[in-house]
Image (cartoon, rainbow, N blue to C red; front, side, top):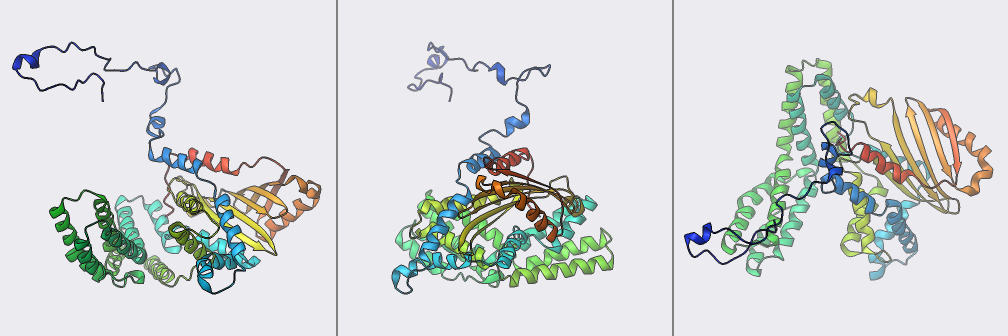
Amino acid sequence: MPDNLRISAPATAVEDVNRPDGAERSPLVHPAQPSKVTRPDGDGKGRDLDSFLLEEDSVFGRFIARLKETPTLDRTLGKVVTAALAEAPAAEGGEAAQAAAPLRDFAGQIALKQEDMLESLMFQQENATVFSGGLFGMLKELSARSGDPQLDLRIADFLKAFEGYFSAESTTKSIAQGLQKMQGEIPANYAKELKQLADKITVSPAGANAGKNLEVLKKEIVPYLGRYVAKTNDYGKVREGISMLMHDISGLEAGTKKNLAAKYGDLSSYCRYNLKLTDGAMRLLDSFFAEAVKKNLNEAGDKFSDSLIKLISLGVKDGAEGVDKSVFRDMCTSLLLDNSVYMPFVHMYLPVDFQGKSMFAQLWVEKNKADEKTPAAAEKRTRLFLTFDIEELGYFEAEVRLLGKHAELSLNCPEKLRKYKGEITPEISGILDRNGLTPDGVKLEFGRRPEVGEKIIEMVNERKRIVNVSV
């Protein structure tokens, strides 16, 4: 607020209103800083419009700030792994063992065989987004090839319905938890009646009871909360809960089985009659859709990933023996940042107790760039980063550049391994060759300062004007 506004008693006469204010005034406009002004001739050190729009208070600016201040996943997850391994031999039975069960379960999943490691990494890559597989690859190809905005609108509606249908269980759980929280924020007499209504909500996989739940929510719970707010004029936390409830209801409504079928039917008809797809292409699209539905309904998941998610969710809520609760919060933040539209990598992680030695590995695979419209173009050039810390050996990090089937690799090893340089280089070339890649060069360094974290942030900054929803 300008500091030249006075607070005074109300004017008592008309002449008081017209009387000039004799108080000393500060300038209405602060002096411009020449260093921040772009001169007409283009000279000077002014900031362009893009930089102005991406200041610290922007969404991207806050994302970068959080990315820099959040402890890296290897630090936080490493603490959990240490605690899990310490809890593994705990005796079964009793309250202490029950409290440590998630940690011991996680410790059991860490002891992976070589083939299990690959399976876990493949699962993480394939499930980095719910929109993975042949169906969404084909839709992406059709969108890029046709350039039709009407097709893109139908694809967007279908994606919303698809995601909503297979997220119905978690959405319903969120609704139930929100209603339970509201019961503690309103007077007891209202809370009792709200609980009776909330008990009618049933959680089931793949939206089996979505229709029934929606009817209870829209015809009973929402009107009841509306009457409560009208009577009590409650502007407290319950208002935030109601806003979140309406958001979840919208997602649940979009994700009914009926809506999913309708949106796919609309998309399919448009492809057949407007894009003039052949009968063979339409059969392929239908088979991809059936395959995607079956996969999501029967997805067994990865035991390692499942145990980690369970451990984190319990740890954030209740804490875990030997691990500070803030560690779990930082871990959740790291995983959420990984899924931001600003993150240009798919991040995979693998803490392993392998042959009696602890190893923590992370892999960042570059996502398709916005100008790579087709899968064929995306395969031309890819960059990935790999870091792993092996007990008794130390920290390694690698940068791999892939161009088709050709690979260039740069590996930074602990200084103590310098004497094995002649053995490491051919071994790495053999690993690339066994995986169907042609090694175009293997560069070894020893004891260099870690750089992967800085390169990740640098590449995020390079793409600050681009969002990637990984569809």
